[in-house]
Amino acid sequence: MSLEEVIHARGHEHVTAEHASTFEVTTDDYLTPAGDCILAVDADRAPTDFDPEFVDACRDSDATITITIEAGGHADSVTGRGDPDLKLTNERSIVGRTSEYVDDRTIVNDAEFAAEGFDRELVDALADGAEATVTISVE
Image: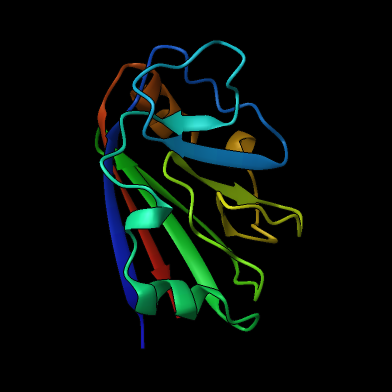
């Protein structure tokens, strides 16, 4: 059984997607050039808004979690795993990690790649401020 959460956000002129170990989507409506892991801003939801059943499913270490980002006619997906320590209580952002580090923003661990691995045409669309749909599925 697959559960899904959908977040609507948008790109920003400072999206560079150059971070090697994380990627992030934030409810903040701004982005500084230092935020090289952030792919989208102005998200309409954060982990604290997710359905409890979805959160529980993410806490299974055998769970496969896939994050798909669509913007400007381009899409890319990254897959990782769940973790029993996932809190998913943050009110501002979700973070995907290639590591096993967990904090209240972490949505996925052992991700196949981080911000730098996302499709460059998608990143360009986000840098142009395109509307973005972020779909998180867990199975």
